[in-house]
Length: 502
Ligand code: NAD
Image (cartoon, rainbow, N blue to C red; front, top):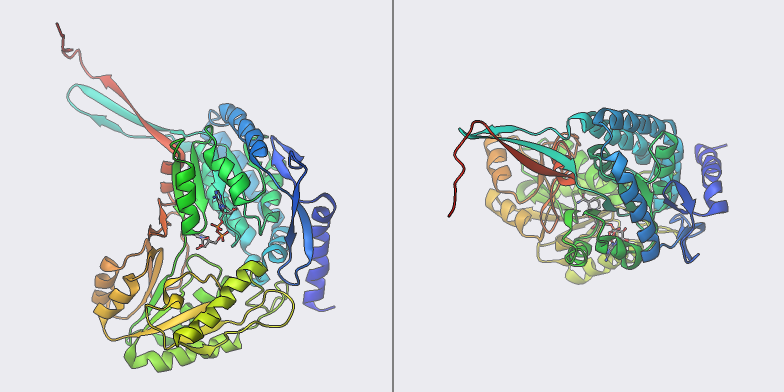
């Protein structure tokens, strides 16, 4: 039996329960269908086959889930941080114990390759551990004294939170939002993406089996304009943690305006990787290709614009094209696969449309640029050369294994090109000149920059974007600032004179 066949048979085992029962909502500790009984299909992007029926929640399901989260908030928010920590560590352990199930389910539901998804559970568990460790001190504040008064700040959980997530690496991303919210003492209603609902259901089941009290984490599946909208408009939801497209962020902000929601937005990106001729070119080629062709390029921090100094442009783009051509496209459960199928035919159509746009705009397709095979949503790792910054392929987020290369003359031009987009999530810089690295990182419009490195995540460091790429930061203590309210209590230090009127 080949490794792929062996993995496929294991995956069938893991998916069997979803085929039988469907992907249900999860409210107040119970697995429930949508109130209307309506369902929608989740399909495998490998061949379009139906993996399961999914509960199609609407406003009434959101009402029930929010009521459960509101009830649970009373005791969860008051539980000492040390006890919350103990429960969340157990959740992390339980996630690790089911790592293979999470990985195989994620691969089949999203098309992401196993070589990357095998770490989904480990990364998810790391998020739980990291924020759990901070739960005991999350409420701590500072003492600020003046001659008459001592001000003491503290933080308290803001209330039930709505978490709305996208379909790219859904398990890891959901834990990145849900773990800090729970560690802060908030309860959660989660609305996962309609294209990838399966591992969200695994997460809530795993968490409750590990001891998370019922109602602390609730799940409602459905579409953005149904369950998603209802969650953002609900008066008992105090904040929305959203990851997704920039224009969806705008909708959500409008929808939440009447109830004065707090928002945290992680949105789109068109991130430059800037390569100067003094860089270690082999390392830069590896990093640039890793950051666009891993995870199918369906990654907010992908290096989707390659800005290369003129003097090395030919040499560098030739090397990148060689890597792109040598990448294995295949079944996500094949351990050799690097690029699996894109998430869904709708998204595949979007990515393919940029192959036509690139040709129309006069760019050169130096690698890929085509659909692979007849069945499934497979596209080839692609490199566009001969592009300029005004082309759609240089400005718009394609969200696939598609890289646009543009030459630049000098530092000023590199900076101008890098900043001339609506987005500002991440930037990658390759140079051996430290002064230049300092100058460039001072002026690049991006929330996160990596110098001479691919994206290496560090949970205590801030994560988030500027411009149309987001509002707010996650990671470290920044997450707690979002999920908690800071309050101040002032005490007199002495019998000071109180002003008397009249
Ligand atoms: P999307 O915006 O289409 O959907 C995201 C979620 O929002 C889904 O659950 C969807 O159902 C929901 N939604 C849609 N309309 C809604 C509405 N009106 N009200 C409430 N909810 C609504 O995004 P996607 O296509 O699923 O994901 C890809 C996008 O996510 C890309 O733009 C990518 O860059 C972005 N992303 C950003 C980060 C980051 O950290 N900045 C991380 C991952 C993904």
